[in-house]
Amino acid sequence: MFEALREGLEEEMDRDPRVCVFGEDVGHYGGSYKVTKGLAQKYGDLRVLDTPIAENSFTGMAVGAAMTGLRPVVEGMNMGFLLLAFNQISDNCGMLHYTSGGQFTIPTVIRGPGGVGRQLGAEHSQRLESYFQSIPGIQLVACSTVYNAKGLMKAAIRSENPVVLFEHVLLYNLKERIPDEEYVLSLEEAEMVRPGEHITILTYSRMRYHVMQAAKTLVNKGYDPEVIDIRSLKPFDLYTIGNSVKKTHRVLIVEECMRTGGIGASLTAAINENFHDYLDAPIVCLSSQDVPTPYAGTLEEWTVVQPSQIVAAVEQLCK
Image 1 (cartoon, helix red, strand yellow):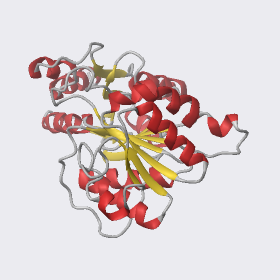
Image 2: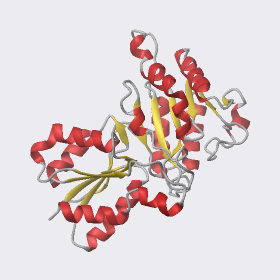
Image 3: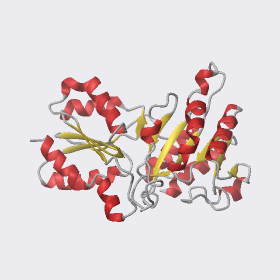
């Protein structure tokens, strides 16, 4: 998947000379997960700019660059580090278009690795989608396959809005054949992964694979789950989600985000507000536990949702 992200970034840098990259070790080292490998040699040190270890400074610099007409892509070496740039992402990226009376647009992409699963400890295993979802003015998307990683990267770079692109540390080595011809995906559309009739399972990022693993077991037990990768974490694609709810009348949300104040909580509220009359059972949300992620591999695994829990939740909902 890291090659698809790099390919999407490289195609946009070829297409538009205003696209540039800022971040720690993005230049000659090629990025912490090699998404920018070879780009500094091709485009030079100013378009692929190695920065000091100062997230607030280089994110603020990216906002200023966007205000003057560039289209910066900011790489956080780890998503947890971007908490140091929260003011720049919130007060600057999210609000400047409004607070300037529309004088400025901030076409900035903020991307990087996050999530649980590589024994990186609490500080390096964070999922920041719950932090960023309440910021007005920014869009949030999460890639989960090689195909949508490239398509969402290109769409994010072309957007006139600031976009946070969430990548998962465990998905960089995914392999998949993708089209040779150019394609760009919508930043606001969910993906129907598996059509079904009995229950709607909404998920995103790495949990897509846990859900699909559970789906195989469920099919063998006689259930027919509909699986949707929501992809757009803000705004939600309520058209696709709503059509599924109207068909199945039951909803299970599976996320790696924290339970308290997470994406699942917002999605639950949105479905209840818009499609409550179509539900035959309460919405169930499976989330990570509200604890710092342990370093020990066994304990780390216990903090996130496992396929067996998904199977059990579906069986309970479909009684």
